[in-house]
Length: 357
Image 1: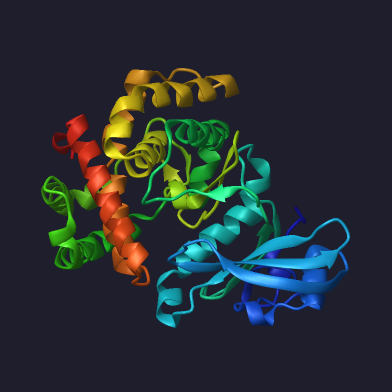
Image 2: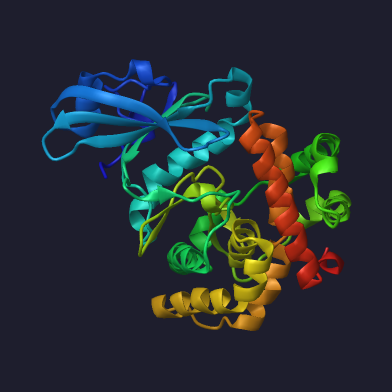
């Protein structure tokens, strides 16, 4: 990964990026000359580009081209909706900062980053990332196999273990209390909208669980975490790419400091069909723990992980409700948020998680 320049040396409207390379926000703006500057190789010709992925907050395109040593990259740019760009400015900045500052330091599998740039306003950004094809994107609605879940959790352990109780993280990522207060104001509105749109399509067990979080959401968000790690905070199948023997994580817009159990519970509760999770949960939790121990984490056991997962499981309904509120309305998106709510609500009930709020 190319070293990012000191942000103080950039033009006033830039947080990250290279002073001589412009930000692009549409695939039509990408030229062979622009790619040559970004990749530091001579791109002779762009031969094809196509949209990929199922992102709600941003767009991804695969570009194929003729150059020495490289034949394709993925371009990530903001959503088309200008109002959504303004709403998502903070999460755009988090992802750019992750790729610019952290990704190359972590052993978990992520795309290599060739270029990361964002405006001061945060509404416009450009990422140029490694193309992980032929790895296949997971399917949030269909769910995954236990074997795929094991691969995903081992990769997740390689995010958590190197940042385990790392006090330096809190200077950069700990949310200000007012941020959570704002979410506390937004969440009840988002919940009302969610139920108006989807109540007739939810499983019978789901509505009461979603309702239970509403009065407690700020307290839940403000909870302290011991241990704490860098968390992905949206670690689910649509944000994972699989080969036969590995998983890689993308979409780092929601990174934060949190409990490892938040990521683990959120993944298990949202990415596995309900019965598959019930049958395999303990085995998968032990596989995650083994990966932590292999990296050198100590003083953490299955009982504490399960306790952390009880509170972490509330990330499922929280993200489903807020995601539906913020994202562009699509048929697939609607189905995805319903599945996420149903699966995570079942997980919370299985764990006896309501009293813990």
